[in-house]
Image (cartoon, rainbow, N blue to C red; front, side, top):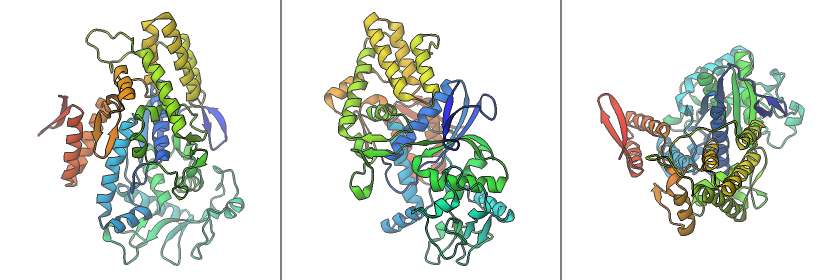
Length: 482
């Protein structure tokens, strides 16, 4: 049985979905004003792994990962660039999608943008006000009254008194308590109209925390199974989400909270101020994208991830050993390398792999099983074991490329595909699945609807460069391989 370490209880628990056979999962996504960095890469890959394993376990998963496209940092960056907020966020959303596809990350089932859910946020704030948990401050903001929610601090494991003493709590004379946080920010006269919405409390925009509460409950319901994100979000963001959601709906919000560990660079926390800050694009100029994914999965998702060239080089060598084993795998006549195949779960290596993954997604142990399987396949020269290696790797998004593609990329170091500003090493990293193609078609339709024809053309061109031809008709858009 799958066990998940629940940050709320601070222990591993048997995973029992609210609705048998179905899982609803929400993960906090990116704030789109700059390129994605290694911390974002870890969130993408970790919860993609979780998503894949839940599906491989026979569960029907609805995966939501949001986009924050209105935020103080976004407003500031757009003003500095002299461009609209929409233009800025659209550009970095496109770059984010390029990064995630390079890393082999499947599109979530839903990718809501905060600006699309402002009415739901207003409704939630009104509920909190009606329930006596929200108040309008003297500066015009609407704040959440933390002291009126008795269970505040449950996720972080600290009392309000402990949290008040923390350095992350800002002192604001307009708040009844320093821990109170903003639900609705009143608009300033100097701000552009695109960052203002009408509300019962005057023109303004939502606070960051209310965005995820509203999007999660609207798509997944008031009570759902899993909520995930980086460890840095546990307090205050996720703590505040619990207070808002349970305060508004008067019921439990989430059953299992999951948090991936921090990324460190040469054993120091990654930080712009320390000068050890790397974007995904910078890393992919030097390392194959699957090597980066493999490097992330070799560490347990809750442990710190220490980035260094030495560790990436080691990951590269290790992945090379697996692909070298697969090089001799014969394929059925007419079947390409990306062809299907099912895991034989009765086989001993698969049983060990499953036991590791069911133990709170223990990918280090699961990867160790892949190496044992590769060694056994080499010793016995068994095509069946090599096929098992390939399909087991697929359950966590690894080993799905032509081995020669990977091995030649390792030798020559030449990139095979360029997407916009992103250079992706080796062909297989961007082989589209039907799901990813349909996702891009939907993104293109949204772009055309909003008259962003440059973005629509970019998506068509990107697909064409990877061998996918789009055909528009009155009935809609279809695709075929060139």
